[in-house]
Length: 165
Image (cartoon, rainbow, N blue to C red; front, top):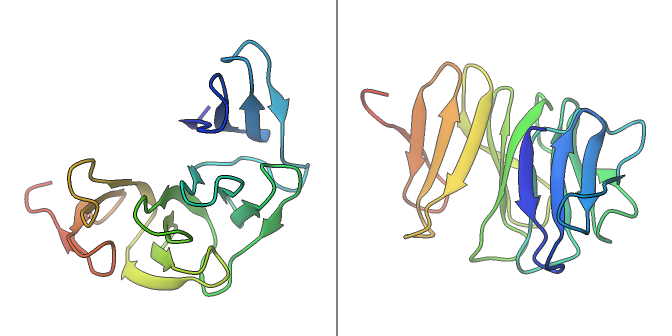
């Protein structure tokens, strides 16, 4: 398991990323069901859009998988991403369809629910994690392999290195 998120629509619902892809439990982890198919495995990051509760986004070794129907069907949404290995995903809790993705060579932003992506921060290697501040929704933090820790104070539009990290 790489990432675990709680499903806000189900009291005992959990979603995880794993070698098998995106996996769901509806009973607090007692039983599990694989949501993605054989062509969407080794999922890394996962994000649920709080403004679009049926939408699930998953980072894969070959791009971003999107489900608009709670995991019944999936499609890839990589338009604008140069190298598609995606490890981190986070949905902006303040705006529907706005997500950040940490990829092999940068941080990408979508403001149209993954229809298109644009590079907001190039990195030398993989961005492993992106988090939105629980205190200020305009602040995001990112952890990278080669560029250290980064932060954004404008909702992920621009990024700066955190000195000493």
